[in-house]
Image (cartoon, rainbow, N blue to C red; front, side, top):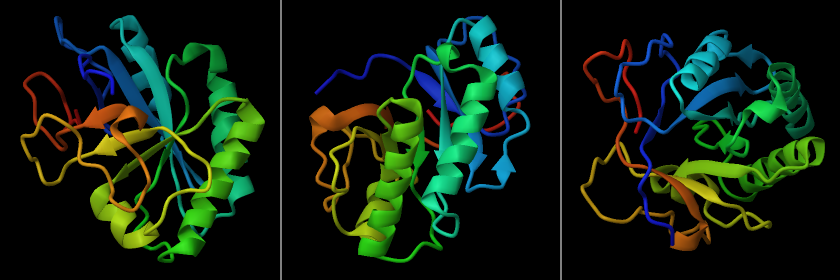
Length: 195
């Protein structure tokens, strides 16, 4: 397992103003959701992160009501429009849709969406999820082994290693990012951030 030594954040509502000596090494922007929603501030946020010296990445919020191919195309079109060469972090699929069907249908939809993104971009997809979501809504591993951005909040436990979904099949070596805290208020930032 990698050591967790870099601090970064995501915040859909960040205004792009980075504080001096902010200590953040990376920023992840919400770019799209389903096949109809674009975060209209992602360009400002990503440009600001670059000016502040942060590595950048983006995520797509998976929705089970949109077809895998349609949402993959929607996300990838926006990535390409911004410039694929601008990102140091692989594309991320945010899996926490509480309106998704439970079990195999949800896992299959997530797998097909990730596959479609990978086919378009030729890059691996990172899965963003938490045990509270995966263990209740998916209940089984994806057919294809993928890296995970492990999310420990909203429990805010002070532990030294990420808590992984018990039904996801991931092990600590699969963790590429560990989000320990969410909705934090930090002096100088206009919006709550997830670290």
